[in-house]
Image (cartoon, rainbow, N blue to C red; front, side, top):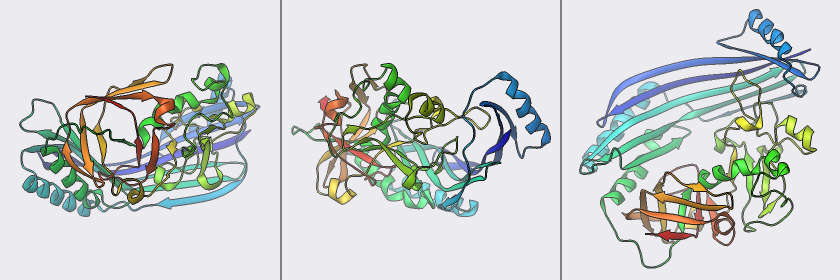
Length: 401
């Protein structure tokens, strides 16, 4: 019988924003502990808020009788990683109030709401076999909902920024750019321009299709295409657990990747599916550190945490610096058909010249086959962007204005 502790500890200071001012400061410190007991290919789990005691472990042992099958825990490995700094509460509050004051003065006619958050999250996995994994991610994020006072809409656009320090400082210039461009309405350009999406947009659409069980059962658009070149040779889609992913370097099973990345699509070729350890044993493939799940549940691929990212191909200056393009800011309601045809309505988008937003475009729809968008239509991905974010992907597709 082997024991394993999976623990998530999160500290958070959240500033609630209403009518453009900080109205409330909320503090949280939560520890969630999952106790796992493995015996004879079975897994028992019990969870508790706070540190576990003997009663928690006994409950996990009793849960073995449910007969939940799961591979035995992974063996000895010791590694830790710490990334970023959580801003002090006073600093966060002062800089957030300064940010809001700048926006109210420089960009009148807008109402700002939602939150600015500083956080630190530590994830640990320890077991009887000597596996000791410890990851701490800290930083802050700015997430403002913006309403134009002259608009009948509930909201019109948003301002988002993530930082390993203080997002209220780092995100100010991007907020200014966004709001100035929003005020300047421009017509849809006559020339065909590429479209810039947030980096996670299409990778999220592909994640379910790349699950090894769907690939092997014929339920994926990509079933039967292993080893084939499906997309642009510049495209690599990978499990990414580097610091910039804001994920622990290990998954919920304790799997770790060399270099913290592993391609599923490499240079346009489908090379493997995403698999947890049970799937890896079933289909004779490797586990890809892509298992997720709650602290008190069995880790599995179906509970994955969005760990796929398109690998960077260019710097910001190389991809966008002197280019004209359309930047998608708000797009909701998009979907992909079983044949891979993708379409989404775009509520807010900006015309960009020389890499920066200059005006807001009318609403439109964007569409294309996933094979075209990520094939000949894939122009590259950069980790930078004119409005922040965790990376941007530049694509050519069809715009219906």
